[in-house]
Image 1 (spheres, rainbow, N blue to C red):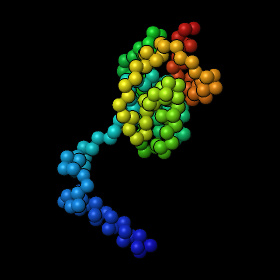
Image 2 (cartoon, one colour; image 1 turned 120 degrees about the vertical axis):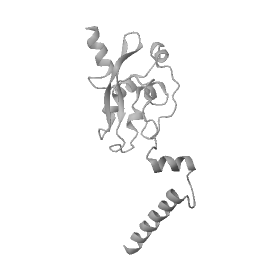
Image 3 (tube, rainbow, N blue to C red; image 1 turned 180 degrees about the vertical axis):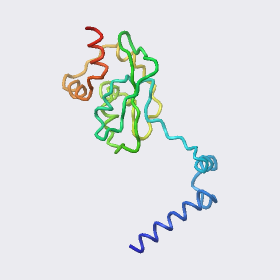
Image 4 (cartoon, rainbow, N blue to C red; image 1 turned 60 degrees about the vertical axis):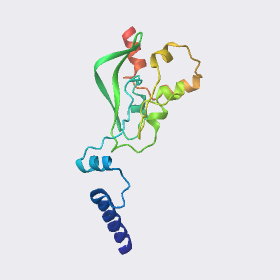
Length: 164
C-alpha cells in the first residue's frame, strides 16, 4: 500500500512539472496553454449533418448516455424524410461499448462510418440523401436486427403517422 501511494504521488508530481514548468514536456506549447486556461475542446462525438435522427443509437445505448435533442428547425433529408432530432452523447455515462456506432443505420445498412462515436466521430463525407433515394438490397435479417433499436420516436414511426 505504501508503494502504491508513493507511485501515485510521484506520477502526480511528474505531471504537474510537465504541465506547469514544461519539464520533460510531452505536450506542445499550444496544448499546454489550452490546458492551463481550461480551453481544451473535446473532439466531436456526433456528425450532425449526415445523421438521420432515427434515435437508434439512443435506444441501443445500455447506459442512457445518448439523448435525442430537438432541432430548432427540422431538416428535410429526402422527399418526405424529415430530421427533427439529433443525438447528444454524455461522456460521463458512456462505457465505450460502441453500440451507438454499430447500430447507426448508416454503418449497419450502408457500411459507412456511423454518425456517432464515443471517442471521435471524425469527418464523414457521405451523401445521406443519395443513399436513401438509391435502391439498395438489404437482407431481411439485417433489417430486423437494426429496426429493433428504432423507437416509436424513430424516423420510421414518424413517417408512418405522417402518412396516415
